[in-house]
Structure formats: C-alpha cells, structure tokens
Amino acid sequence: MSHDTDRKFDTLAVWAAEEGPFPHGAAVTPVYGASTFAHDTLDEWHAIAIGQAVGHIYSRNSNPTLAVLERKMALLDGTADAAAFSTGMAAISSALMALLGHGDRVVSIRDSYGGTNVLFEEFLPRYGIQVTLCDTTHFEQAEAEIAKGCQVVYLETPTNPTLKVVDIKRLCDAAHAVGAVTITDNTFATPVNQQPARLGSDLVVHSATKFLSGHSDVLAGLLSGRADLIKKVHHFREIAGATLSPEGAYAVLRGMKTLGLRMARHNSNAQSIAEHLAGHPKVDQVLYPGLPSHPGHEIAQRQMSGFGGVLSFVPSGGDAALSTVLDGLRLAQRAAHLGGVATTAGPPKVTSHVELTPAERARAGIPETLIRYSAGIEDVADLIADLDQALSRI
Ligand SMILES: *Cc1c(COP(=O)(O)O)cnc(C)c1O
Image 1 (cartoon, rainbow, N blue to C red):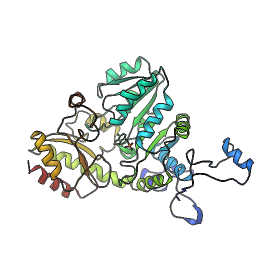
Image 2: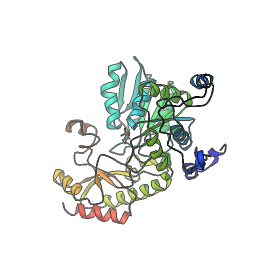
Image 3: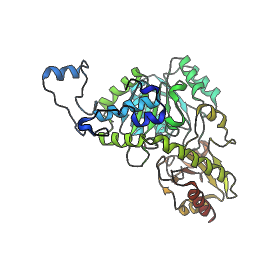
Image 4: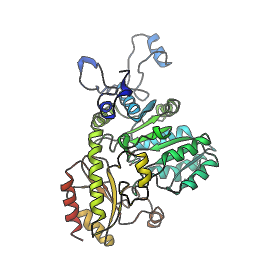
C-alpha cells in the first residue's frame, strides 16, 4: 500500500485505495449505506468526534465508501487529499464559498462552465466578493488582473464548449506571486490527459458526472489538492451538506477503474472525427485542441498528454442545418451531457449556455449553430459514417 505512488496511472486506477482486505473478502469496496455509525463506548465515540481516533460518526461528515473514493482521487491527481460532493457544481460552489469571504476578490476566465459563470456573475457578488472575468486566452490581461491582488484564481481548460486552452502553469505562477489559491476545473481533460496539480494548481475540481464515472448513471463532484485547503472545504461540506451518497461513490469508483482505457478511446475517436470534419465540405468550423490549426494547440501539447473526447463544430447552412444534422444523428444522444461511453451531441444554445441571450453568446464567441459533440467509445468508423449521413441531409 505504501508503494501506491510509484505505480503507473492505469494500475493506480484499478488498485489505489482499494487493496483491501474488505469484510468477508469482498472483491470490491462495499457500499456503506449507513447514515450514522454506532460506538461501543462513550469514550470511543468522543475520541472519534474530536479526531483523536480513526472512525466515522455521521455520513454527512465522513463515510467509509467516500473515504476510499477520496483517497483514490488524490492518488490519481497526485495530490495530498480529496473530498467528494453530490455534484460537480457542489464541489465548485463549496470550494469558492469555503475559501472566499466578504471583501475578497477572485480572478477567472469568461469561458468557465455555465453554472460556474452564474456563481461568478450572480451569487458571489451578493456576498461582497468581487469577481473579475478575463478574456480566456488573453494571458497578459489575466496576469495583470491577478497582479492587482486576489485570493483565488479559478481556471478551466479546455473550456466548454469552444475548447479554448488556458496556460495553467503560467497563470498559477502569477497567482502564487500574490499569494492567491488556484483552482482548476479538469473535467474535460481528466487526470489521464492533464494533471493541473503538477502544473501548480492548488486545487483540482472534477465533475465526476462526466468522464470519471463515464456511464451517465450518477451525479458527483470531486475536489482534490493541498491538505490544508481540502480540510477547509471539507468542513464547509459537513455544514452545507452537499455530500456525495455512498451509492454514488460506488458508481464513480467503478467507472474510475476503466478511466485510462476509456480516455484512450475517447481521445482517438475525437481526434479522428475532428480531422474528418475539418476536411468536410458541409462543415464551416471545427474546434478541437488536437488540431494543429487550433489556436491553443501548442499550449495543449505542452500541458496535456491527450486532447480529450469533446469537440465542437459548425455545420454549414445556419439554423436549418443545425436541426437537420442534430436530428439526423442516429449514434448520438441529443442530451445536455458529455463524457459517457455513448456519444452525446447538443447545441450550447440549448444546453450549457441556454441562460444567455444570443448577444451574450456572441460575446462569449459561441456560434448559435455550434454543435458540441462528445465522442463516445463506439467504433470510430460507425461514428464518422453517422456524421456523414447526417451532414448529407443538409
Ligand atoms: C458538467 C460540468 C460541471 C458541473 O458538473 P455537475 O456534475 O453537472 O454539477 C462543471 N464543470 C464542467 C467543465 C462541466 O462539464
């Protein structure tokens, strides 16, 4: 067990934190559905309650199944500790609420996930927290804003849905120069393709609803990073209560074991499809960091070992073409989701960015007829044939 960190990613994905032995010789981590834990004596109970003995009191605070998931996440991210939440947004909002207070300032990017953006624009200012959102790829602007002083720098890369690439190390260095804590949303990349903690991010957040669990059957969020920061956010979770269920933790643990295998296929499928669509006469634009034509390709090559399973494209022919192509896809679920084994597709204007007006979407650089396509793990020849038949209907 002590050699966990010497092992390669795919080995850790299977074994880390799950070497057992489990009760009855069970082959997998048991689901401890108990809401509470009983103690033999008051002394034992008290020792656990004040942190002098190892154990569990109440599952909002800690639970054995969650503890295994949290340990596994930390080992896969190369961090000291982790905490599990009921959704990705619960992890993000808990981290921001736990680390920021009245009078503080956070610097972030314009292209963060839709829900995160709402926290920045609508909620945090209500609590007297100043939010500055910089142009996502204008790093000089971000550096200048960070240098003015802030408590948190919040990053996300590649971004949703336009796949912009943010230079993690560069902005983490700028943040640390003013003593700010850095948080990076790594949902699109996963730890297989990108390890923000190794690039200087103090905290890493994942919507485990997406690739980490991978089977579209659970909502979950994970936060990993520096032990002192995780402790603060964990304390907030105990009180605010957005704890993951033990059943949810089990589903994420099961998915994580095949993360390396799945990401290899997601990466290669998305790359082949992006290259195919880039040369397609009925496609106006393709956004994918794995294409040499992508403006963030060089940074992506430096900080990522794979370019991920999500790409976006604009079919030629406006609104009519958008419906024709989307409705014509047979091997894609039309859904507000990504990262599952089954391909999903949807336009940001009805999914991640539905709350924005057309003018706001235009300002965010999101074409009205953009299709976000999360390549599943199906045979890529079938996916390309499906896209071709859908595009041929235009
Ligand atoms: C989906 C998503 C989230 C939110 O996660 P939920 O589990 O849906 O709450 C956050 N960030 C990114 C990049 C996402 O794709």
